[in-house]
Image 1: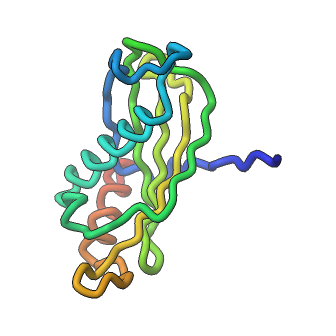
Image 2: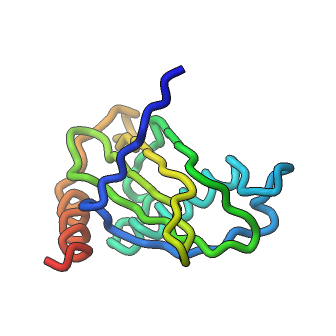
Image 3: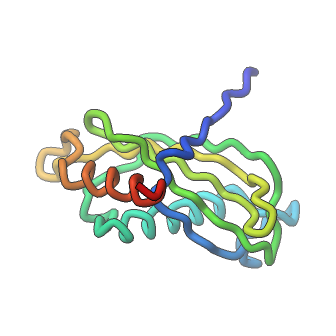
Amino acid sequence: MERVTLDFPTAAIIHRHPLTVRVTDMNYGRHLGHDALVSLLHEARVHAFAALGLPEWDMKGIVADLAVQYQSEARWPDALVIETAVPEPQGKALTVYQRICHAETDKVVATARVNQLLLDLSSGRPVKVPDDVAQAIARATAQERGA
């Protein structure tokens, strides 16, 4: 099976979220479990959008797909940072990349990509990414770059 590499778009970072691996995040292999990793990604994604004034639940998005590539292990009580990057939105979805790193060494634990489809909740049909969402993402990206 061919392994696909997820390229993290560093230039599109909008937020960095610190957190610590909890005991309840561990699996039987004594490292960060997949289910916990997905929850930590969601937590960081909610914080990233909230920092832009865009509560995730108000954007009416659903996760269309998730890809995760593991690069190293994390264990309790490791301090981590989750970087969230969102390239310029195209069409009816946001592509959200996240990279989990050890806070002290920057060693990458995992890289993830989520495609979040935005919906009109009354019809259930996909809608174009609203201009205010695209503008908030562009401002955050520029601010992260120091522009």
